[in-house]
Image (cartoon, rainbow, N blue to C red; front, side, top):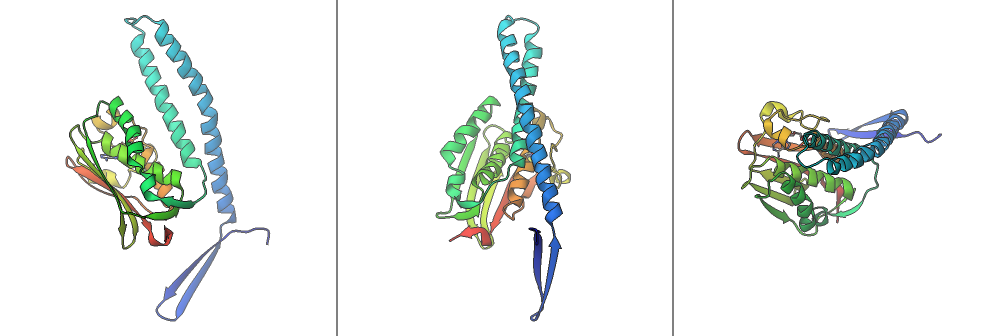
Length: 259
Ligand code: ADP
């Protein structure tokens, strides 16, 4: 009656017994969608003042002479407003609700396109000397949200680039495995100490090293990845050796693979 939402789990015990558990999640679902609306509205409202601030900062920078003592603080203010803008964009991405469709995984990381975007980012950080290798098994399609899968993959590749020294190597692949479709990114970068690994997907969590502060990230990337993956019944796996490199991977389970 009156559109209640039930979550039903069926578990089997031995050969003959089934256990059925039903839970009323109507209220939980309402709260979750209120929370998402709230985050979406707040992030949206924050965009306008940030754009105004940035516009005026640009004008002030041109008005000041090149060797004015105000150039440095103005540049810093601009850097920080840009950072805030990218946090707001990412928070908006976290709160968006999107419909699932048939997604061609080779298109999710359309490499020329993705590399162009990532290259810009890498160049801004003067990290243009890296090598990316890419492989994708043919005809691998899943039932999913393309934008979310794309943002999960690009966040992981972008991290691999940002946390790898120039001359490093990054391998990206989508492979068919017995449990589903596996995405993985391996880098030869700075690596992560084991005590940090469990906390990486927390919002705003950043491993406190000189590299993180230099790379100008927001600490939201892996939270977005986690959110996107949970919508696809998948989890992020991390294996890393400090000073040698990391592998980030996830498997989209078989039941979401389209024939
Ligand atoms: P950020 O914007 O700080 O990169 P993320 O959520 O994407 O935020 O990542 C959280 C932290 O995890 C980073 O600050 C960094 O310390 C660590 N990290 C993520 N990816 C890598 C990687 N490929 N190699 C080493 N450290 C990484």
